[in-house]
Image 1 (tube, one colour):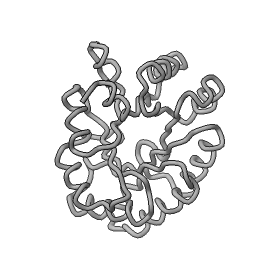
Image 2 (cartoon, helix red, strand yellow):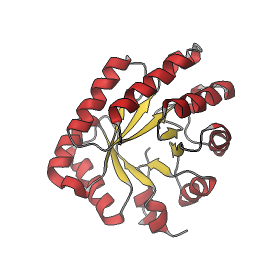
Image 3 (cartoon, helix red, strand yellow):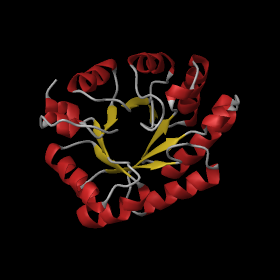
Image 4 (cartoon, one colour):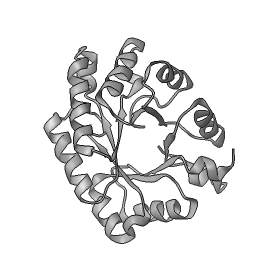
Length: 221
């Protein structure tokens, strides 16, 4: 697999709380140069990116991020605002407390609500695998599938661990045929990137991929 092919599956990410406009511009310029799938950015930068780059940049943002426990109404408002300002893809965090309490139907309904707002726009569902048991991960595979979301995503990159081979393999066994997989968090080498793609991930969330392909030493999400 060529580096160009790998980068075409990358959501080039900058989600640090202290990200400046200069950081975001650098991200966008790299995304344009290396043809990444999208830039994944804080909601506060969507409008400025769209005004600056127009349709040249595919904008992804995060909702309920990174802890997931805001109420559905707040997440819905975030989605509506993001789409109105020019975002094309939404990465939402499930209510992890609801998952831990076994309220799987409630989680499914929240996902369904947000996908209804997204319509034809892509919705990726972050389940934050590092906090879940295998039973809970399987339940989330079913919830994401039943709710009609487009992707299940491993991690925020802000939890205690990121994507693992084992979780991706578990997803593949339990998601429906219309759900794709995004691995995120801890993708730190080109070998990691290629491994997750070969495992069947259609997207990789990382801040490191472009730097790795340029031969830089990198750190971050």
